[in-house]
Length: 279
Image (cartoon, rainbow, N blue to C red):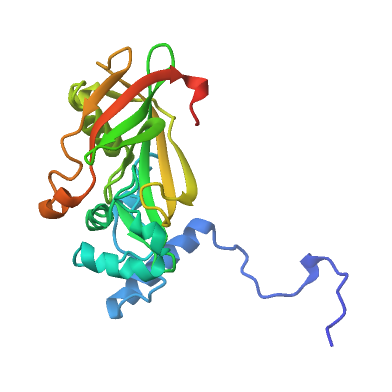
């Protein structure tokens, strides 16, 4: 049975309290001293042990993100054939059979390269879910028009509609600024002068997540984590223009697989009013 509540003022409670309570700094210094003495005798318990990391105490800019904290299980495959065998029972047969055959799609060699390069992760599920980190660059001109890629010409001769700003899959542990510069160099490099031409608009970074079926890989659900910025790029033509890409995986170690993959040969660009482009 609980004792009745006392109606006496707190000052009349006869507790053996010190005349002066320790201040918060005193308690903090005491805790540090105890941890130091304890660590001399034996390792710190897990709750107190932590690696020394100076960046933990620095203010990290919002855009400096290491995106490879993948929530999905990354599947490892020795070659495209082993990936194909793993995918077949997990995807609708008619959808998988259309990869690289249906105009505008990619093939299993493309997906294997994305996995081996760390650009894509696959959840071990049926169907698998492909997760991709994408940097999107809304390139502006002085009239606040936005540059969009209207369509692409692929290595198999097909044309794929885009109607979106410059976008590129991010590399493992790549920060946003580096991904933006690389995207501009790879897709617009034939008309601009490298990284010196790129000026990211401060405070323009946004992150959104989209989940939808992949256009490149029919039947494969996809989760796109989109990292968007606005930027000015010097040296771009004023009207419609075309750029040539020198091989999406030209520097990768798996050149034989890259030769079998569907790649983008030409990008076609045009300027549109800002309000006509999806944020």
